[in-house]
Structures are given as structure tokens and as C-alpha cells.
Length: 212
Image 1 (cartoon, rainbow, N blue to C red):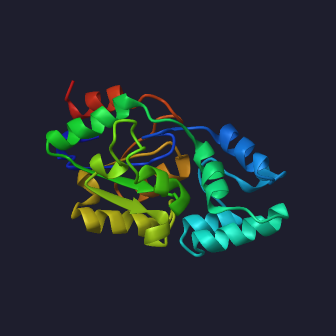
Image 2 (cartoon, rainbow, N blue to C red; image 1 turned 135 degrees about the vertical axis):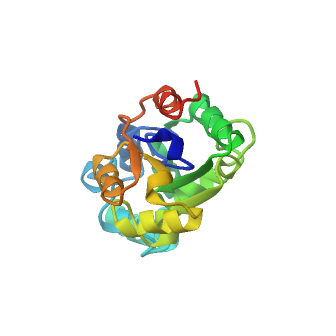
């Protein structure tokens, strides 16, 4: 890997920037009445109405209507948001500090995430980091599946990110904990870093970039 070429760094959200809890998400969706939540939820790429929400095919209101039908009672927007927020285990400060450091060093830093408006309602608020900042404070740009109308590992969302960042694949590093997403990026010639879910990637990244 030619680290001296890297100018643009794209990060996944869940499991990389924030610590993810699949089990907590399942528990919260069960709490609001979705007894077979485990069948509906995925740690990396959602399916069904969950995937439709993350792909921007349906609105949050349409999702609320559909999941209310599955549950058998009218759910509120806040209940849906509460359940989705179950995916958030923690927001490690070391990750946020590294994002700021990268930007100070002149790297382009962006988010490339399969996510949805319920999650981003929290992330875009000043509750995100516990210090009064939203997620936008840490990134130059956000490439979100429901806005791009594409989900990883689709090559289209990677191409949109490259075009938006005005970067070539060779000078881009993509960090994700999903193997299919990493493989999709590699197929486009993008450099990759593949930490395990919730693993500390800050030290390997600093070593790779030579910024220890």
C-alpha cells in the first residue's frame, strides 16, 4: 500500500466511527413490539423495509407506517428512533480525535455510510459526541445511502464519493468493518483498511500514514 499517495480517507459509521451493538438494536426493536426483530435486522446491510429506508426508497414516515403494521400497533417517530439508536453502543473519543487530526494534517475526510434518517437525526444533532458537536464537525462531507439512493457494496456509491471528493481511487483509503464493502472498494482500485467491528483502528491508520 502506497500511503504517501493517500489524500482522501472515507470512513464507515457503524463499527468504525461509532461502536456498534447489533444485540442492543435487536433488543430495542423487540421492546417496541417487533418480536422477530433478529430476522429483520443485519449488522452490515439491511433488507426489506429496513433496507428500503436506508436506500432512500421509502421515507421515515412510510417506514413508521410499515413497521407499525408489522408490530400490530401505531408506533411513534420517537419509538422508531429509539429502536434504531440501539445500534449505537458508544462514540469513542479517540476516533473523533483522529478524524480532527487527519483534517488538521490536510487529508480530505468523509463519511460513507449505509444509514437512515432516524440514525442521522441523532448524529446530526449536538448530542452526537457528548461535547456539543454534530457529526458534521468531524467530516468534510457525508455520503449517506438514503441520500445517495445507493447502498454499499454497490460500486455506484463509491463512485459518487470519489467524484464528490474529487479524488482518484489510488489516492483514496476506505475504512470499513464489512468484508463485502471492502471487496467492492478494492475492485475499484481504492486502498482499504479492514478493522474488525468496534476494533481500534486509530493506531494501524497512524502507522499506515506515517503520522505516529
